[in-house]
Image (cartoon, rainbow over the protein chains, first blue to last red):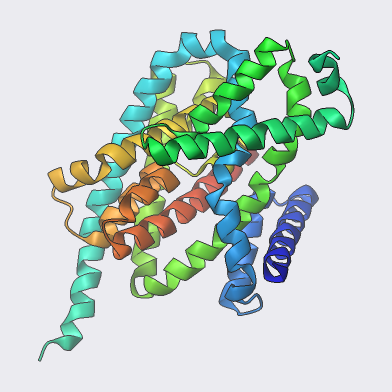
Length: 124
Length: 234
């Protein structure tokens, strides 16, 4: 429990700091800025993984709860949404296919070679 | 006592908004455990919308409590660094090439989503809402606000992208001959964020690690790109 509270406090602190930097004029949103700072903290061992593992797991597992209130707001925009519904669906499906196929094919080309390199030292 | 008056109360109203949301979410999770096709985010809204319309409570009054929960999307974004760090250790040898792949995917996602919405004649706020539709919800909402979009439309598109990836992602990638496991995971994480990633967990650790890393990285790339875009628009 103490570990969990400590983890939440660290994560909220990093977010507030990121948000503060954003308000000072850094163009990247506070959350993403916090994510990058936090990543640096973990990589430099400034923040120990075991301090934040449980808290971050909890936040990510229940992320859906956090966007329920915004989604409920969908009901306020029934008319706009129904007029744009087809555009929203077609554009999502099209863009989904484009991203999936582009990333998959490029990744297969680029990363295929990495795997080869990793395997080669084991060969006689 | 009139229930809608309770929601208007400065403190009780906020507490009621939070409690109503948490209970609805817990019920939705229960149903999801029994019935996999019941998507929690959609099911969770049903009891809330029912209560609000039954007692004629305006959304703005409910959202005084709701916005407390929305605020936590910021810390949740920060928390993404933990799986990104952990999976980064597993993927250490290929992080550079993986970054390149995901960055291309993130650009393709923004351009094709916003571009196709624009070509189909959508008004500017809808075009801007489409741009971050491939990335994980908390980041997508931030990007959408930055670009002047409508968060609700972004959320709808984010969820649809996730469900498409979880349902057809692996099949489509096999169909076009993607064999590298890391590439497969990266594609699903970039196109379908957490919902797609969750569908890989039972197949392969490598795919899930790549997908989870790609989802966070795609969010960061998209956000940085949108920030630059927002700067030039000003």
